[in-house]
Image (cartoon, rainbow, N blue to C red; front, side):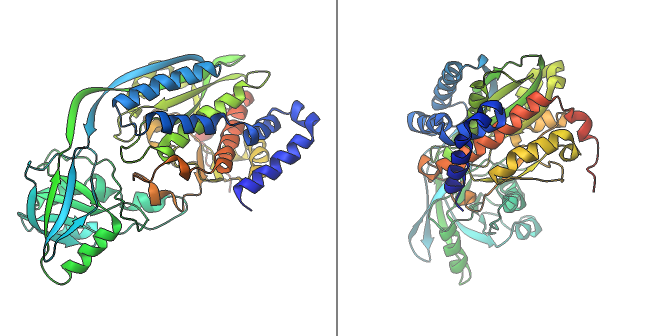
Length: 462
């Protein structure tokens, strides 16, 4: 059954029993998630009015100010902006083409934080490796004067684990190539599609290696280079005109639903407002901020606030890895007041599994959550949560427990970080299911009083 049909049927059955809905906050949240358009409209307006939102860009700042106003109008408390310094990056004109043994343009996108080529570009032969390990194993100096090309393929998986297995070639590969003498670095896009749309993404230069230009090829173009290289030498022309901007300012948006009893205890929901510049950031991560804010919006419509405070944080620089530490640092001694945190950052695909800290699944809270989300098609796993999200990593390192919701990501990396990341890729029913699950979790976590820190220290029962 499709998510749309599943939720429609669920909404009908819940609405039919209006007396039950009125008496049960969880039933109310679920039924409203089916019919309420707030999250969907939030995402539509965000992507339509502001488009791409690279960290610290004018569009990102305008989007943050708009989101602040949107949360204020929705009844959130203490809605404010938090600024923090980052090194921003902008894409300039870019091109790549094969110049020997034939002439052919290539679809290419500079990797985030890449330095530019000389104005006239680079002309050089390639050294092609079908795996990142092959590049690592190359002898020092063996790539002198060459453009290193790595064409390792990403595996399509439901949980996105194929991305984690291969993304290192994007993040650290340029420095690996530079240590071997390469003057530029190209990779097959870290993605699972076969379109001529390259996938960008952040990369990081090592301090002990020269900074060389780095870019991603579309997957069909990487295949083309593989075929040509098998028959002899291939020469490319590469031109990138990107720029970095020191001491730029990124912005995170924060709003709360203050708890009615223990307001000093916080359940934190989040997503990231920034995006890459090729598309409009609908799945990465406009959907996530719409889900987190939408869950808070629905809880705010209930007749009574939960006991604990629910805080929604829309982080401002996830794509360049700049938002997590400033936010955690800003909490200071109050970091202990965050009883549990979670981040939605995997598009709007249907949630199929939930993982809680430590032995929480076997607690009374876990049983309540399982009963609430099972009708939404979500299984509560006994396996503890393993990864909460990039923007809450520093909170987690400082002891904050976290929740993990696994989504169907089979096609997520077909459009991730590409020009195809646009609003039309969002399924309204799947977005609604995400909002319903997050709202159910947040309300229960804020109402129940569960000690997630203690649970996180306990191994789950077998």
